[in-house]
Amino acid sequence: MTPLARAVDALVARYQRHLSPRKGYACAHRVAHGGPSCSGAVRDIVQRRGVLRGAAPTALQFLACYRAASLLMASDVRGVCCCGPIPIPFRF
Image 1 (cartoon, rainbow, N blue to C red):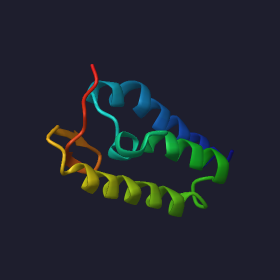
Image 2: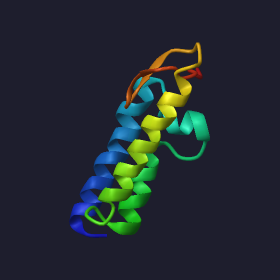
Image 3: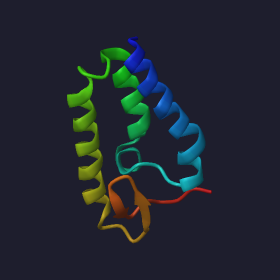
Image 4: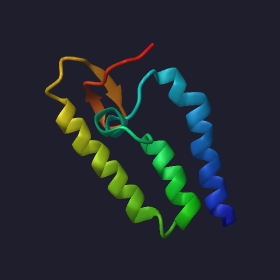
C-alpha cells in the first residue's frame, strides 16, 4: 500500500474502533444486505486498489448504502446512520 492508502486505512480503522461502537448502529447497507459495513468495505477497497483508484468504488458503496436506507424507510424501527435518519434495528 502507498503511504496515502495506509493513512486512509488507519483513519478508517480508528473510526471503526473508537467512534462506530459508540454510535450503536451499523450502516444501512449492512443491515439491509448483510456483509461488511461501509467502513469495512472502504478499508477493503483502499487496501486492494489504493485511494485514487478506489474513489469510484467507494462512492458506489456509499450510493448503495443510501439506496439501502431508502429500502429500510418502510420499517418501524428508527435510528441514525451515515446517510441520515433511517430505520435501523439496534442490537444491544
